[in-house]
Amino acid sequence: MDIQAEYKRKLCSADDAVRCVKSGDWVDYTVALGFPPLLDAALARRKEELTDVKIRGNLIFGPIQTAECDPEREHFIYNTWHCSDYERKLCDRGLCNYIPMVFHNVVPYYQHFLTVNVVMVSVTPMDRHGYFNLSCSTGTTKGIIQQADIVIAEVNENLPRVCGGFGECVHLSEVDYVVEGEHEPLPQVGGEAPTEIDRAIASHIVPLIADGATLQLGIGGMPTCVGRMLAESDLKDLGMHTELCSDAYVDLYNAGKLTNRRKTLFPGKGVVGVAFGTNKLYDWLDDNPGIAFCPLDFVNDPAVIGGIDNMVSINGCISVDLFGQVSSESSGMRQISGTGGQLDFLLGASTSKGGKAFLCLPSVHVARDGSRHSNIVPHFSGEIITSPRSQVYYIVTEYGAINLEGRTTWERAEMLISIAHPDYRDQLIREAEEQKIWRRSNRR
View (spheres, rainbow, N blue to C red):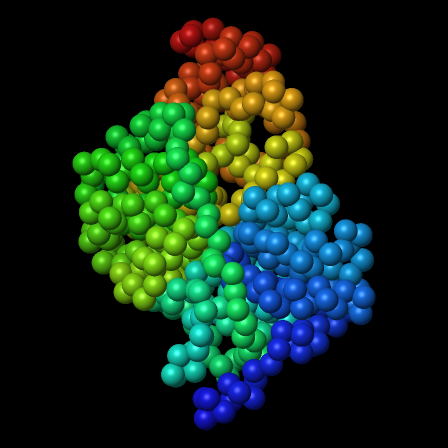
């Protein structure tokens, strides 16, 4: 194959590339930085020509013009596997629907059940061998490409070229159209200063982590705060095996804590599926042989995770009921985020030799009307259950850390009330009594 001649043959404008989309098609935008803004804008310009084009995305930071241009959703119907802040706002406006999942199953869903007529994905510039790098969206993208009828690669000159364990590249021969154009700088995500409550919660977790532990830090401020505090700790030789790589891992690396030396899987390399953060993260990931990007059906496989000694999973959640059920993705019936890999890592870390899984939340939240409410509740009334009580391990608030594994319903109630905000403990005890999960001999 004459690589350069083939490249020129497949090169076209975004408007020409999206002409392959037909009414009724399923179109995929992949995940996070894999979102193709030039192709999305071109597809939106075809609005009046198309009906019922169904689009899937995942943790996209927007704007998504196909969603924004069609408030009646007659032409484009956008759906997400996991809500970013932007996609959550689309859900609030009725412009996005959530697709329930656990991350290690996303690619198998495509392989066994889903149709992909067209996949559009941002990639790095092609190398001399004819390969485009899938960059920070490696986790699910190759598996989607392999199921697609038509593949359109949008070359984004700003994306870092990442090193892979496997699945991090797509060859020109697998691509039907190539689109070039100027792009905005990569989104800057995270980097906010932790709150005092974040630091208090993190302070209960750090003492429970041992030298040589391998870390999974989930999405959000709390896991990021734990990473920063670990960077300030006396721990050493920490490892990385995570679905999402954020700035927290750069902090750990710069502090000399992240070495990956003692990992029992891919020793010497941090393993990751998807990444987003700030420029310091993108610069660190670029051509870094110490980091291996792999598909999430491998990274998030509970059996793989469970085979890593001293695996520590740290994720945020929204609320917990007195039975130990956890909601991490909805407030009532309002979609906030998604299941993601939380359940994958709960299962895996729980079976790891020396492993631990932490779910973290502040004890209270303030509603939009200014009223304050406990995040530990008697029972759920419409919230989506992300993690079942049978799989929950450590729960952590600013008032302490408790381990629910193997505990009875009355022990769970006692332990959860002990880390609830003091203003709500008496009421929670009364509710536990009514639910017949409270012993009079329980400690107060």
